[in-house]
Length: 203
Image (cartoon, rainbow, N blue to C red; front, side, top):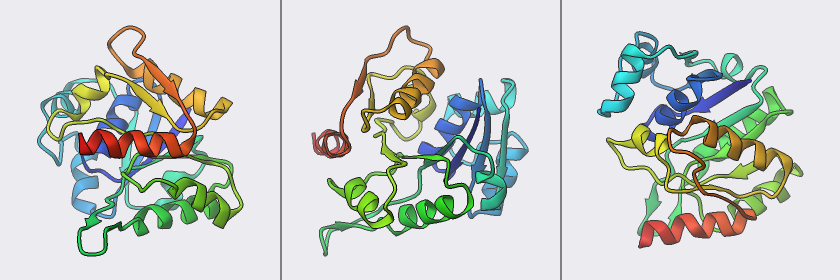
């Protein structure tokens, strides 16, 4: 299976490394420096498990700055781009997520898009209404910066916000990558998954 990951921050890179242990992964970033480091098997972020995996583990992982190369033929596209919260307006800046969704739908409309970036409640429903497509899933991450890959390898739970075969398939991908046996999986609707993430952040 081919999986694309948009964004090489700690969320994107940890998911890319996790999934590249068993699948072909193309990681996309706007930073040529980050892309070069990943292709040289050096981590652009401080995370001991990521550093060790890049240096010592056989990974089917390639990084690129070219969206067409990243998304072509991908079964899943994981979005892990920044969505900063503006305290003045009380809104998330979701423009980077929306730009990736539009680009994926243009370059590879058959792909299932999985948002890992933090988004407001109701975002996926609005996106589906605006695009007329239901190929977008929200699957929140519960990762610590600096131990992101460890947390992906030892997940406390896996939450996927779509009750569908594609939602279950993505949950199975994340389970497959885990080192703990049978991590708990919760399949919900998109709004519930979005709320779980925001409540977890607040807590």
